Length: 625
Image (cartoon, rainbow, N blue to C red; front, top):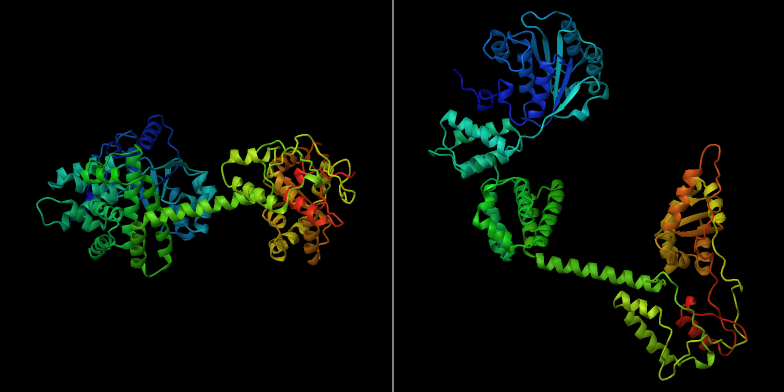
């Protein structure tokens, strides 16, 4: 008799023999027991998990001479005929090769005939996702209302390719990947039946390499039996056949990286490649090993593995930091993505190993980069008047007679800049400090008036004009998608025309609404809004935009919290009957086109203008005598 492969010889013949699909078996048996068997089933899941096998067992259970029964006898002529494939009432169709509409029409022509031997005609359509659109359409009516003696069982590994009209006509069962423990138990039974000696490590490696498929595990086991010339199949035999790497060699490679021995690491990698291991498989095995290493270090092991008991593995787990493991994973993931488009795969993995040896330098570089980014952010926030407390700093009123010399002002300015680069508490203290020492003179805490008749006051006595909800409402209610698209086209070009800080803040915001002559920009903080809406920035931005023919006359900047409140109110009130709703009125806290700094127009101008430049606008109150 011809040799029968192990996965065929040990294919389950009863529900009892199926491994890892208890939830499906219980449902099908209950349906048989309660006489509620559906006319169409969809079995979907990974390869080698028992879809076709369970379909045949279901056909046996429905047509057994003792049935329908929850467990076929496997002894009657019908059960044995189904096992051998000689019963005409059970039709198995390979949709990959019979995927045309004509094939399905031929099937439909036989559906109407009664079963010749059993009680039911069972049609098993394997790889059903391979059917053409015309074939699916031809199947629809029959699948929806088949004769009472017909059961359809569709099997596929890719259910998302099936039309919804097919899915809705079937009871769907999702098969799970089989666990390593279940595969090990089955392999031990087969090894005993076949009188094959194999080590525990070798069995465990077969179960891991199968990736949840019992058919893959039995096929690999069958191949190892043919490969091994030893009385007992070893781990090395399995690794040679499967193409996987021993975790012992991975440990050696990682230890070389920890000790920064580049020569040893590259030599170990070279030996692995010379054994015929493919580069993508090497990277995949190392990534999976690092994943297990992280789970072990975090006490989050999902399944016990033999390597967890290995002393070398435990030493590696103690010696390597989790941050280093994350760093290695980043390197390997990047290399895995990059080499998909390259023919020089070996060069990529060698570079990856060298980078893994240099992990300390990479960590330092990463830390420096993050630190520099943080410093730039703090500096920008300081320049834009960012306040660490919600309350505004106390207004300072300076007497011209007590203005310090330029050297004293610069000394204080340097001191203030040094404070900004320290902790947040120091920044806060500096912003709220009302006792400014400039040599030995102490300025009084009570307000002092600037006494000059030549200060031009560019703000009204009632304070700066605020943006109102009506301003926002007019833009939102008259928004134009065409105008917004036109503005978005030139939006990135604004920063190239002018590099002022206020404009840079504006272009990095989110453009939310655009009317015919105005627009709204969302920024993260109210201080950024006020800076971007300063008069000089406003004039420059309008000028730039109108160079492109946009005819913009105004814009508004709003902090994120305010914009979210406004847009939520708008959405709740908007309807076809109310296309331009009146929005809730509340203070927005944003100044509308703040006036430029006050200027001095006489011989004292240089001195007083230095004061105006030295102190922020928010810190001074200019009054006329």
